[in-house]
Every structure is written in C-alpha cells, then in structure tokens.
Length: 143
Image (cartoon, rainbow, N blue to C red; front, side, top):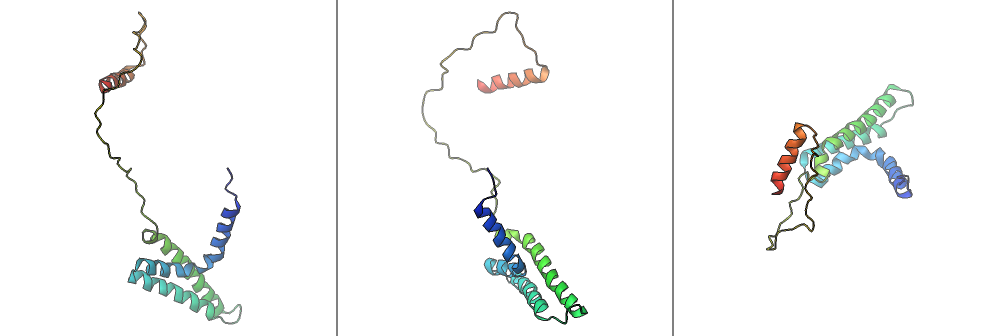
C-alpha cells in the first residue's frame, strides 16, 4: 500500500507552508496548556521573529544579516522547544495494556475430544536438557 496519496501530499504541503510560523507554536502551546511561563517564552520567540523581519536594513548590510539570523534563530529555538514541550500538546501514551474484567462463570472443565496416543516404543526424541525442562514445566502447567 502506497503512502503517496493525495491526502498525505496535501498534509505535507500544509506542514511545509505553515512551518514559517513555527516561532508562534510555543505561544500557542502555552495558551492551550494555560501555562504562563510557556506563554511568556512563546511571546518572546514570536516577538523576536516579528521584530527581526520587520527591522530590515539595506540588503547585504550587517543589520540585514543580523535580523535575518535572529529571525531564523527564533524559529529554530522555538521548534526545539516545541519538541521539548511535547508533553503539553501530545496525548499521553498508555504503555500498560488495559486489563480486561474477567467474569467467573460456572461451567464444566474443558475436555478434549481426542485422547493423546502413547509414544511408539523405542521412540524418545532428545532435544537437550533445556528442552526437556521446558516440556516438564509445560506439562505441570497444563495439569
């Protein structure tokens, strides 16, 4: 099955289009989690991003290069912080399997429809001591 579907291509293009706004993601995470420290941190990244791309000098000047570097740096730092704050915006993984409620029912024990044939005389397969230990434990478990 191919993962190159129209829906996946559309999602990838949207992610690429909105990756420019990665500096605002920490602010949105803070607002969603109602965490004031994260909100302030996100506002700082967003402010540096806006300030960096609104204050531009003549192309090729030191101010132009410095503001572009500050804007891209705020994007990179915000992306790293988004990953570090993933516990605030991703649901928790449930690593423990859910226990099923077992209802005790009264019924007759299971009886197999066939009887196991005794081994042929002189036939004794040997797979080593560890295999015989496993077989003996299995026989005890099945009793």
